[in-house]
Image 1 (cartoon, helix red, strand yellow):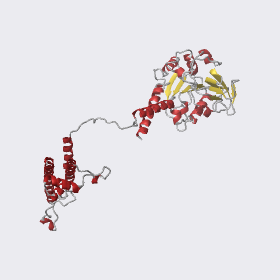
Image 2 (image 1 turned 90 degrees about the vertical axis):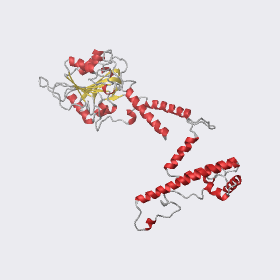
Image 3 (image 1 turned 120 degrees about the vertical axis):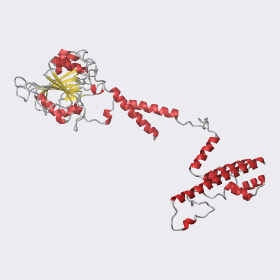
Image 4 (image 1 turned 180 degrees about the vertical axis):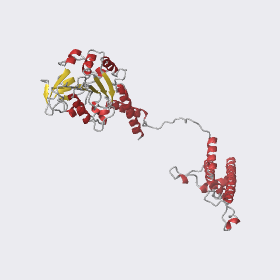
Length: 454
């Protein structure tokens, strides 16, 4: 039971430590206010320098973008770093904003997000990391052509649902997001069946002749971080995707919605390598148990860490008897010790080791006769000394007056005794019991001395 509790505590501690160490800088990952390596403050400052208004939040914007100078919608770009925490209604609102001229960028969306949106793309197996290797664009997207090779992450890959040929998709539900109309799909950076960037653009808009937004799916957001922004064409691709509109809203959901589409089980929330590390930890505990466990074989004698003198033991036990007013136990201990010493001196056999504890010791008749013969004293005198037949019980269950006297005369009256009288009687009884115990100890000592002298 104790080993199981220790094992469970170690596994939980290992999971917490692994989660803290393996996550990329905690909450600052892709945070536009963070200047560390995993933040995205650099790209936010560059966009501001180019005249783009950058704001951060935790909720998906629901209000329509402000109209432009000509009365048409100016549009905006909405970046969502954890799209799997959004609900179906929030995802639908994002898709609706693309029809109104806004760009929506989803960073590493889960397969559940793609299914909820009804997109004409599917997600592939995750790669080995969030950053990915450097790769050429391999598509005709203007932003990708201007950026050239980049290190877009491959945590999620994308492929067309209607094959790898052609760039227009006519979905029965309509796309993006299950809306009527055709959608052009651009897959970049990777094979068409495992691309790291997918751009979905409706071929027509429901908002008059206004501009049409688009839905951008990123396989990973590592190329946007301060640490990787200056590598290859990462900065050019980031500016090309995020600077198309005068406003950028950076959404970082921290709490999953009640009906989030990307709900995960406990096993999916565990970090990579957790089970392998747990197996290693289990093996270490097994070897530790075998190393520290009980060996088979005879017991090994070890010296006591502390040596206590016999006088201290006797004094300590005597004080315990005195504190508990255990005069009968003290008298019994004195008699038992003397009986054992006398039997050893006189060569009298004791009871078998398997006998009950209260029957162990020498035979009373033989012991009394032998001691009487050695001391020349009467067996009638020695018997009560060794076995206590003349010792009156002194427990508090007895009346609080001396054993050889009756109750006080005042007790015969109808008036009950006062607490003071009861306490005084108990005090007299305790004093007489202490005197009787001292007398017994002296008598036993004298008997022991007589047998030893003979």
